Length: 97
Image 1: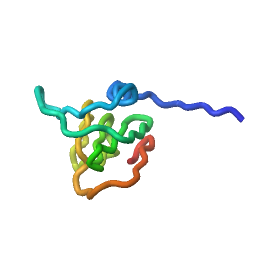
Image 2: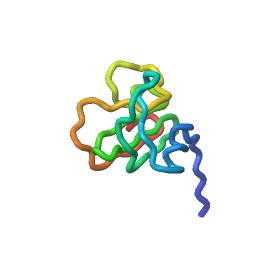
Image 3: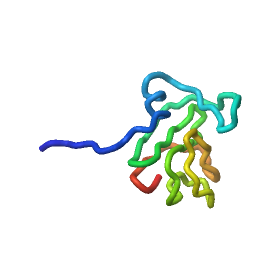
């Protein structure tokens, strides 16, 4: 059996894989808001669990897959997913989180 992984890892995810990274906000000059402890990468988006167990996602949001409400714009930098308490587990698919 041969396993083929067909997923483009967003540039931001590569930085997280190389070393623990602090999340910068979307505004220029924003201060770091946490360190990634776990990441999951889907076909078009990625999410990370911060050290404070908050979920932050980035990438394509055309179908609402980032879970951030009615904002269907793409996000190149991590944004906090609202309405969640402390997250224990998560998974990112092609069109869902």
